[in-house]
Length: 548
Image 1 (cartoon, rainbow, N blue to C red):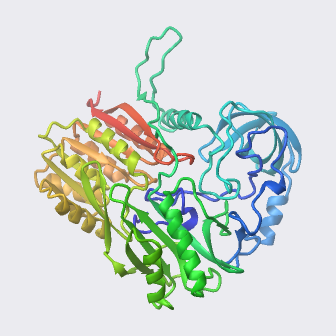
Image 2 (image 1 turned 180 degrees about the vertical axis):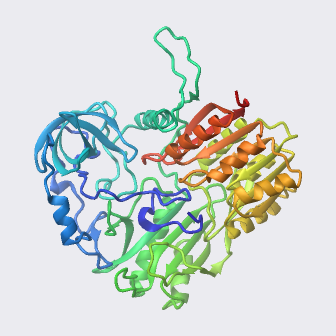
Image 3 (image 1 turned 60 degrees about the vertical axis):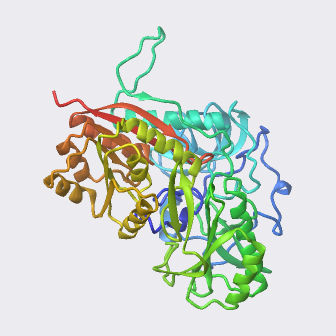
């Protein structure tokens, strides 16, 4: 996906150049999630009232059901011969957890996915939906709780779709994410992962290190993208409920930087006072679509972007003046105009309403200019960890030539340029390359060159020009590397390949191709870029061994 078009289906946890947050199952129950007590469901009285954080708002005219009558009839038709039936209650053991964070159990050999259940638990469930090979069930009661079960601290956790595993201890999350990587390498890549047998002797295979986590896995996000709606009394904004476009009004998000919460709350309050209208997704009318806030952790600077359905903003000067007065650490206020009826957040036109067009931040010793639409990793603490591992795996002595495929705005390229002789970055998005070149100038780095185009087209052209890479670094979107890029890597045969991945399944697939072509995967390090969500980043080292 174009890194300048982050989609709004997952405005919280989809943060890494991809449309994460598939909304396949709104019916999977969230009751019981994050509730440490067993044998009972959360009471209705414990949930936020309509006047508190967590109220659901249907500001955009979303229909109660998007399923057509014929489709509903097909879905409701019973499947003969299954060991369970719809609405049946049963007790099952949870033997694992899938990549969506759902517990996996079996009823007489039939697989059931249970939202909110953890591995090692015994749970009572109600079957909600059945297919031939598997079904979905609602968690009713925790008969035996996992030692990793904790109370989710977020008051709207059971409604918001941003985090999926807050009800799991952080140590448990890190262990599960490592196992998720191992499972994908073995099942999809058919790769041999190194393990220790009972006598301690090691097999030959890929070493998968423990997941690199955070000392403080809260308040780590530097960017908020909040959809705006209308309710009685003014503007509301928060995140979409699981599997829907119902806005959950939010005052505090525990994985956002506190200042992001403050800015969003103040914009809603001031906009309501001035009579600013909210965009209606169904009618296409109304002004304010999204509020986007960016926070530079190192410098403290902040940027506010008002995404509007049209150029004209009523009471613009009063609104901007009030925002500046209320939030003095905001260094940039921008407007992005998006008139299209789409779930893409940003439109094509961005203009500065007040202040600069960029804010500045650092990753390690490298400074970056962050504009309204430029991609920048949302967890700066773990980004430095991930990029440090990338440099370590690249094994640079200062004499190497490195190619950075999918270079984006040059974040990894500039990190590598501090340790290499020459770095070449390639990216298909022209605006990203403009940002990359600006960031190179900002850091006075002359040993890095950026070019627009597809890696599989540009890199062979570089080779014809005599550019031979000692190391190739790839950091593709969730779909993984283009097959032609993998062919190009196998043709160039660099000594080392460092693969940075946001999707363990496509990582495993691509490692299999590279191994079949003569590489050996030496080591994989999972990095927890998004605590309390199901997402995990990986950094993998491959070395050229040649074909037998």
